Image (cartoon, rainbow, N blue to C red; front, side):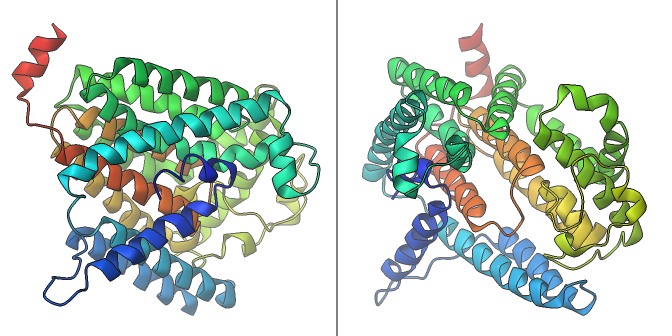
Length: 389
């Protein structure tokens, strides 16, 4: 399954959901023979997921679009269950851990070669698979590239810790070329953020998790006000943005205004596309002519649809992940921090909270980080510092 993610999954990013959650179902079936204990999900993660699911279902009572909220609540509950199930139980047996990462490395290189070749030839493969010509066929790879950035960090961590320098360099170069050729600005930003955090985690290993935690608290708490201020300067920023960037700023302008209208409980899960936009607001926009868009920022979606209560649960999830990262083996931690940073950037500009393939990619990345940590020997900070010196 993991071999398919960076190959077939790169061509069709939505396939992540079926592949990853299918594996979770298989793991459950294999764990249920007579005499074997069932898989036990992480208790803290399960409690946070349950709290958010309850909030999603409760939001039907005040939702701006109850039928849509009901479908979204059902989807959120299902993807949370699938992600928790994949992460439940111990990592694979020691004999399989090494094989998992070696197979994934080869598959990732094949996937990158496939994409780079198709991009250089102006996407004949993508058009063949879709059965029609597209004006911008390369955008069909965007989701796969976003997810590939996440999977790359634990894979690079394995190669570096095994001192497989040639393979690590080849994978890093291949990903860099794919990002240059690709059209996903989110993937490029996520990769740069990951590299920056990786370097910070390598230089200041004890400080990086608390620093990221403090940054998340400030970012989530100030998000509606920061995005509103940014949107108000969209005219000055327009010459430096792509059309999609200006479009996002216009969406964020009226979305942040709706946050201030219902700051505690929001407009109901899945209801962002149905929140009202006034004629006066529309008169100031260049691209936007009507409502009907999702926020293009999962943290803003939390604020719009579930209010400050949902944003607090989301922040709790992020802080729990950082606390778990802080407890990883020292040599594994920089790559986990880089994956967290990349995921945070993608979440800030792409996908909806209920996007099943997004949660599948996060769960797959978490599974790989846990596996990498299980095969990483403990190394004191003093030894790491001496090696760097």
